[in-house]
Picture 1: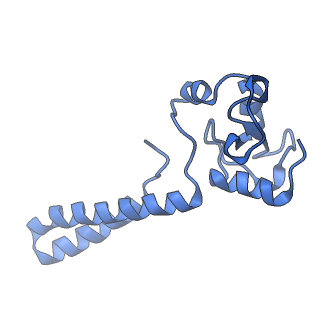
Picture 2: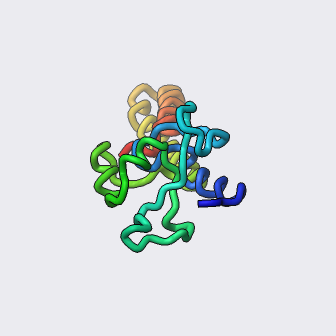
Length: 140
């Protein structure tokens, strides 16, 4: 399948550069380069052999081994083999979730720290915000 650079970029960015099946980090420059670190291909979530299309909503970045192993199985069944239920988040969604996690961490830290007084609330709130922000939003 011949794909324009900007379309490859959109598909790659859709999962923040991770394989949508196993979450392995991919390298944008190693598209289709078998044997290279982070090599990837465009994978059809609903396989063409089962009526899937080349429309954007059906295309995901996948490491070559996952794409080849998936063959014509459903994406959901293959993700379940890795203990996952959905694709990694896009950059936009990832930022939104990290912001919510940071706010939640700050609130929880502030409440816990309040037993140590105002300075405890401030310090624990800051620590909670940082921990919330650093939490991987793709782990669910």
